[in-house]
Length: 438
Ligand SMILES: Nc1ncnc2c1ncn2[C@@H]1O[C@H](COP(=O)(O)OP(=O)(O)O)[C@@H](O)[C@H]1O
Ligand SMILES: [Mg+2]
Image (spheres, rainbow, N blue to C red):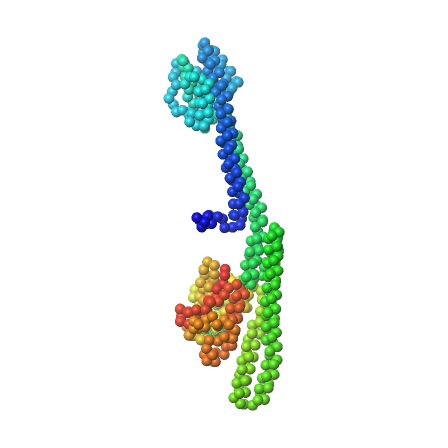
């Protein structure tokens, strides 16, 4: 039960606000309309019928007392002038058994009043389209027909009332939509800006807190939070860069000192350790240098991948793409390319064949980079994203990596609001999947 109600309810804030606003109005209108028709309209119709019945009764008694046709003609002329009634008398006729309309609301009211006022049998026929009501009364020697315009019996105020109700509801709804839309727009804007921030994109320059007080407050808090997070990231990066940079001076000094140690095995080990440390520090500095000030930009994924494929083939690697659809991505282009290159460079080190493919789901874009190498053992999949982690030291001796490629790639994709997953490739080696939210 709870579930089905949730399904029916509108999902948008605008829809819900309108529902909350319009439901009571609609209810009030239904109740008012019901009361109006039940009480007021019924009563008005009853009174109109009563008055008409009285006039009919007067004509009936006049016609019964008339001595000849001329007198009936005079009564008829008076009735047209004073009452809007058309009166005719069919001498010798009898009441036909045509359809009787005393079952309609007005017919019922009229027949009730007539039965009260006259004793003769009668028949009522209502022609809604032609707007006429006809009462035929059986007199002693003929049938008296009295035709009157419908408005003598129908109170049109009921329809006018209904029309007004509908018109008011529509006007109210229109005004509500207009105003609510304006109230909701700043919330939607804020949501978009928040989402873009999650993907490492800047807010549009025109964005500023606006709308109702609470919304403005939320927007301001969000902007403050965003600035704090940015400052924090910048400060972290700057500090790490500073430490790495400063480490180079003692490293250089140590390198010079080991030169003076001669050619002992201990000295050789020391030298290789220092060389490795230097490589780590340089790799990190290399990465940090471009970070931070690059702006996001919409790029064609196809163009980027085609370029990477051409460059990679040039160095003799078997790399191909599998039917890439035309896709635009909003990313920091240099960082994004670096991430792709880190993954592809790994594959070129361990595998012979590389394949790039795209899966486009409803909410995500999946970019697979498959290779036919040895892959990464399951238990190490989580660790390779840790800085300086390498799966198998002996395997890495000749490849010369220092274990920053995947952590940096992951860091770049995280800052775009996505993430990288590693797993088994259908080609037998590693499948690295870059998952970007849409
Ligand atoms: N395509 C791959 N096939 C097999 N092993 C891989 C692949 N990519 C990465 N690895 C393993 O994950 C480790 C971490 O990779 P990475 O962070 O790029 O560091 P690096 O390449 O500098 O060693 C590598 O040392 C390697 O053992
Ligand atoms: Mg690498």
